[in-house]
Length: 514
Ligand SMILES: Nc1ncnc2c1ncn2[C@@H]1O[C@H](COP(=O)(O)OP(=O)(O)O)[C@@H](O)[C@H]1O
Ligand SMILES: [Mg+2]
Image 1 (cartoon, rainbow, N blue to C red):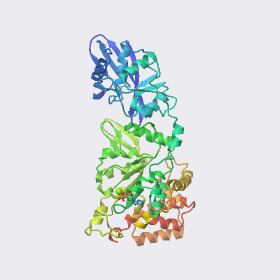
Image 2: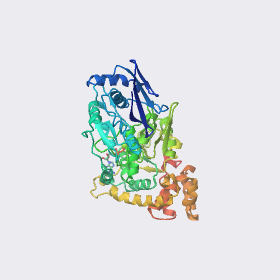
Image 3: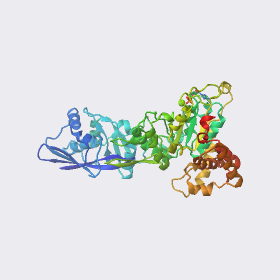
Image 4: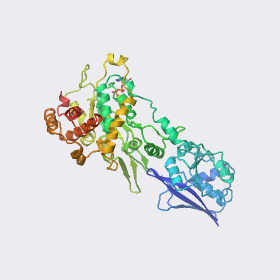
């Protein structure tokens, strides 16, 4: 006799349905075929123990389990449940009537309980696409699947619950569906932090507004305690709210990484990721023998904050270059090649020198001559090339800190950001995948960043007098375009350029000497 059950496996951030065939033959062997890895091969032991501890019978016959399609490697232990149910069905302990209606996902413990797993959201999305009636998942992952509408979701804690559901179709395991649209609209306006908590620093807030408007990467340079971390954390609060599509994509990545927590299985706020400077390149970029998304993908549609930038290993920073350009990361190994989305805004922060007080208004820097430049040189040029805005942060004075005048909040700033973004949306409407000024290349400069004679003069003079490097030129034009958009100006005017020039601190060839 032959029985089929259905399960799923995730590759990148998308799922593929796996058919599991279980056949009973003559003999006593157990065969598992169809490119299973060692964790899948071990499922026989877990299933045997789980059956024994729950008074289910493991048939004393030859069992052959085939997993198809055969060319996809089956990894991990999530196939325990579909294999176990297949064995129970082929030995007539579970009815076969409904097996083709549900996808089954879950790792079994020896006592028969079902352990949480990763990647449930992409699996649920695929199940719906292929017309399955429902999905049976570990109870702890049920909220993640429940955001997919028109798909019944059953959360099970134990194999016996699944057996009784398949035999009787009673719906006690069914979880309530989440009204995604409603939840989404309710949640997108709530933040844990707000720009109104930041006292003073008007020019710095302005720089953040420009960065958010044009999608420009930012580096903050300033002494400890100046408020760099505080500011960086608030950047995502002034970015336009995520669309439902963006929210689902971000949640899919977090689901694959097993990081969706809580009652509501949808990430509604733009992520803010802050990997420590000891992060490995696999941790940052993704990879591993069971490929997993890294921090840059967890930050997709949000902000990646690298605090104390010079402390990161140079090799780790080097690997950031390609995803910063492509907004996606490809992980290739001998056995596989997967793509993870990685469209994030980079915010980096650093002290100006090892002691932190170079250029400080009150404190003295104790670093020896040359140390400051060496410290700056630790950041690679090509990475710096992808950062449009440099902001020098000095601490607010005691008076400003204790001032009771309310500061402007994130919602107000965000309104202006959204208007500037709308102008860009119209500008780039014919360019697939392009949505903000930071993404401009040489072609777009010629069309959208034309300067008149006086503009050219200003820029030339600034480049000469400040000793700006050639790389600064393109950055200044991009940022000036965004400033002009915030000003609702079709052309880039002198004040826009003058402001953009201020955001190139690290390009001044004498910065470390002044
Ligand atoms: N402009 C500001 N308004 C309000 N609080 C501030 C401001 N700047 C700094 N602080 C306070 O100082 C603390 C330290 O700032 P932090 O962001 O950690 O500095 P940095 O990252 O530059 O070392 C913040 O948590 C905050 O309480
Ligand atoms: Mg800090």
